[in-house]
Image (cartoon, rainbow, N blue to C red; front, side, top):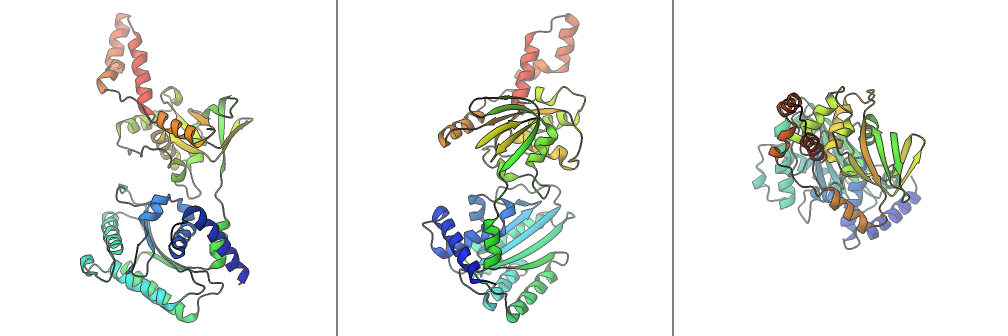
Length: 402
């Protein structure tokens, strides 16, 4: 190891602290820095990071705990999926010091015993603060709900310091004891313990996420301000939305102010039906499409190159297209979706775009009755197909883009 790793980490962390958490004590800023590095691939927002942090004294030796189901962070408002394929519990301890201690690992084992032993009533854990007790209660409740469904379970302990040395044998013995206990409680779980020293933290901090993406297009119109309106292949949009684990890239969808309404939502069911009916009219005829904000956009041949894409409208459409191609990522499909890529000149215009694209007049179901097949047939037979049919279809299209 090298003292240069420690120096590099301290410099990187100091820049992070001044930029993101200038008013926090150094130790608390370091905890958030560690969460960012350990869970970098999860693309957590600031609110999501804070949701798993423990505050104050009596935290049980744990600085943060995060529970994922199907790689999605479980929070208070999260609807657990009907089919839980995977679950992961991540427990973190971050110390702004230059070594790994036995005490820290021993505290993690004591916390694990409180967490996993159902004979221990959460309300009786007076040695833990309110945040720690609530985190234990929520994990037990959430995991119990998916316990009966077939799934994989992974438990990861991450212990981070600025050390440039490996943990000594005494610390490793404590780790073995901790892992053995967790394995006894969760026999089918994959239990791991990760030491995050200066070198590993620095490497993670230096790793930047990919910011440039491409979309395959059929047609396009470009504006002088660098924006573009495109017909994009359905499979290409699905690929853009897919991360390296095969899951949806929630960070790209985060700016959208509307949460995904679920597969049972009437609009999403209609979008799903349109996707499944490959012989139906072109998909983009029936859907208002997707709006993406970017810092830069350019068209090269039959591709549009986008810098830092953020989906700000069309969340429901995006989710359904992603799910349609999830089990068949290489599916050949010639259909297109309408995509607007806008390059706003400043943050104020960006906010206006988000507000405008997410402000739509709700349509009464009765107003769409003109598009029912029975009305279409009656007009066809009478030879008087009126404009109300096309207006109704337009209404359906408008209602589908959410």
